[in-house]
Image 1 (cartoon, rainbow, N blue to C red):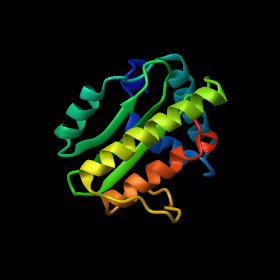
Image 2 (tube, helix red, strand yellow; image 1 turned 90 degrees about the vertical axis):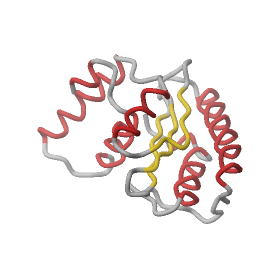
Image 3 (cartoon, rainbow, N blue to C red; image 1 turned 60 degrees about the vertical axis):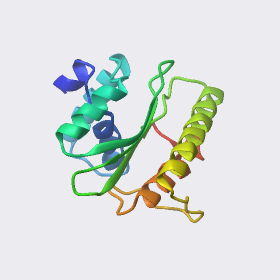
Length: 157
């Protein structure tokens, strides 16, 4: 909570919290804590500095492979590799922007991700890739991120 109040709540953890808490039955105390954090996240701008994210990942022995923060709104997309060689994705599309802006942001993320994938020499899966905490391959993680941004209307937060 303190990190969120200071605007330093790691985007990866934000996405992880949203994924883990959506659709789960939480105790009332946990629900209240999640709501408090969400209120803070809505009112306090969080990280918008890709270098800070890269530095934190490097401290943990991982690396950021793809990172796009939007300055115009509170949206981002990120693909990381942890020190164990597993891949994670995190993303948020600001709920306070119009559907048109959400679609434009999603198009930009898809374009940038497609460009990055060329340097990684990976192909995107055409079959649906289930969203997971960790992915064993870069191709699976990149495909999951791309597929999420194919449907911006389904992205919460």
